[in-house]
Image (cartoon, rainbow, N blue to C red; front, side, top):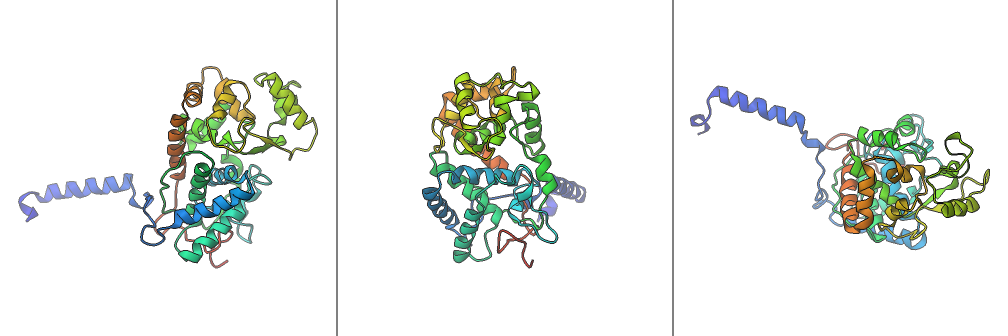
Length: 334
């Protein structure tokens, strides 16, 4: 019946357009908030229950699980490559400089995986578990909730060299960090919103001690640091002291997800260089966003949720790519 509407040449043009659209927007890259609706419909509640239990005994774990998701996604996409241990063929990303001795929460992901496998064996990827754990961590700590797009599959390898080069680190200037975000398709609003995760959690003295004593090789403290805050930090982190000592990223509400992080920046009390530069870099586009989030928590929460979704969409493995690992620490069959 369609012959009366389309000539053969028109049909060929339509086919060509369809192929072009499919090339630009590959269907296997689509995630869905209902991906497990028929195969593991209660996966979100399983994850949430395990995360809540972990928070009951470790107030830091929420921030750590969000950071784990971040450090996974920035290296070849959100594919759970960070979870893989060393093996004969894998150099673990856990041993990369930005991760070693600081990224934590692997045991909680394993606990979630066990709980999920008991309900829905062989169905839910470790990469999706990491994404769901990050959402639960934010919402259970007073922050926003969002429907997590799902359908990621797990990588078959890791990229330690990529982790060393792609991950933003606390000592970098705003231009460098902005470039790293741009490289994975995240914009300035994403940068400021995701940095807002530093509204809770802790950082080791080694990540900011240079700001206290020898900023940029000047043998002086970072001039953007509030003087009273500087004194407090120097007492916590004495020069040549133990670099693993922990300090609250947000001294005003260390375990609560709120907008106070942005007020800290306005008061020159950002703990990390990469934090304070969002507000103290003259003429930067980030300044107005910091001001906006500081005055409107709902605007921050809305942007944070969207930016977490944006980050979760970085190069996921879908369709027949990758696998569903039985054990998040190793590829199947190894």
